[in-house]
Length: 260
Ligand code: COA
Image (tube, rainbow, N blue to C red):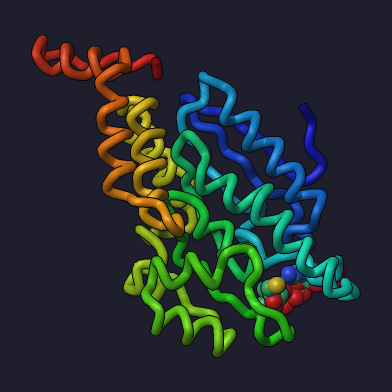
């Protein structure tokens, strides 16, 4: 399928989804969110794809937020629907994807842009990246999961500071605060992310999906994360990947996982 606002490239079973509205600093309008939803569904269903990378087009921005020009005149019900639809179509979708998602944060990650990066399973940033949740400076609050996912990553105190001050932090502070996993020079960002993706995809796709479900369960209200871990752990024993992984270990060879 063709996309107006996205570029898709495949290499070594890694699908890179590039948000491609550079003249608007890759701001997330509704059309782009709908396209991301489709692209993620496609990547999820495609067995040849093992890891998904999300990044922004150009050297300046990952994503500078939700498209302010699009929602500036929304009513109360429209505002509520914007957050609910966006969370379902994109942010929860990324977090619960059945394969690992890495955010390659190549510049400004503000508002919905930081919320998108936070939905991913791993974040690697370029040294020019700036991150923040500036919504309160616009008279609104983060609506794409930011009030929940930021405290989980950096703790309540730092999250409150970022949300209440609406200020950006640089890549090194983001690294120190645990908001990103690594910081690299911008010209090495995509190669570093690719190396990590290739490292991850050596592992069993069924185990990766189970690990994502188990980790996520610890953050679901009312879910018992440890119980979910027991269930997911047990289910692994019924997979061909588990037989292959353990057999390969005993036979002192590399495992050849099929994702079954
Ligand atoms: N929504 C819509 N358009 C956006 C946008 C957003 N979140 N962020 C940037 N843009 C647009 C600008 O309006 C401008 O478009 P124009 O040339 O048609 O006027 C273009 O992208 C370039 O942005 P500009 O502001 O000129 O770049 P800058 O280098 O001076 O500033 C930022 C960069 C990121 C600091 C600034 O664009 C900004 O503050 N953006 C909004 C961030 C935000 O509040 N995000 C949260 C939204 S909830």
